[in-house]
Length: 129
Image 1 (cartoon, rainbow, N blue to C red):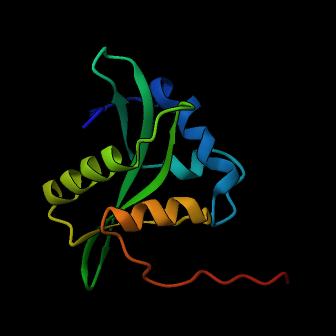
Image 2 (image 1 turned 45 degrees about the vertical axis):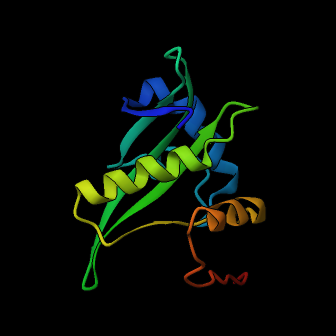
């Protein structure tokens, strides 16, 4: 791991998490709905600098609990996919969740997640009303 996840407050990670807003699959136009009720994590490098962040919420279903990554962002030049994957899986295990989920419309992120063992679980379809 190049970075380690630490619990954080919104003030410490808002700027990094806001990078996810333009890519929000469900149409959010601001950060607030993406982090409402979420656990927030700062990804810190070996020098203690915050280089990324992610937000997770727990969703309980009949199939079990899921930990949903609702927002993530990092500084340019820092590929945090593997590190956030490891931290998110650790949190899912701590919450006794059956899986970690995320929604993305970024093909490159999908490919990187697949290399980490993620799989496509479905498609989100929309049509203008």
